[in-house]
Length: 156
Image (tube, rainbow, N blue to C red; front, side, top):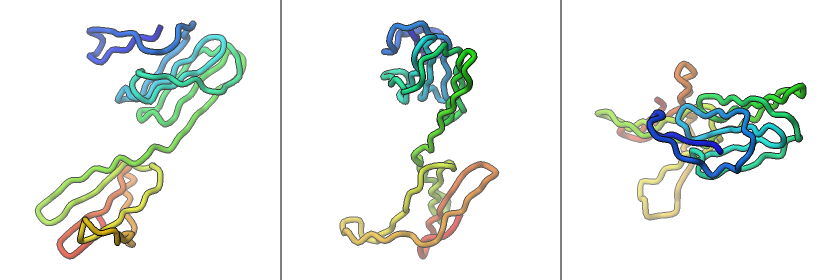
């Protein structure tokens, strides 16, 4: 069994992971994405804090350990005498909105999947237009963003 704690280990509850000979488990920093290696056959992943698990198509082998990046988009599993396997995915953007006195700033973590920002001055119509100015990318804090000010869209 794989047990999950949501309160820093004070209490533990069994997850829906199958009963196997688990050798290693790793999680993203927020606990939402997990990877677990079973010693004889499979690697399992969860994207909802261990509520459900998916078996992955990997070769049978003696899986020994697992690791995860902080955001859970890079997973690594190691097999005894058989190599290291890497899974990498690009996350969907999680767009945040913040405001200041004169504008609204939309931001997200990069890298993320591509998306388009659209605008319309009347929310009830269907004539949405793509925002044509590119977002600003801040590689220091891995954020992309657009700013909305008086008179229209601008870069952040």
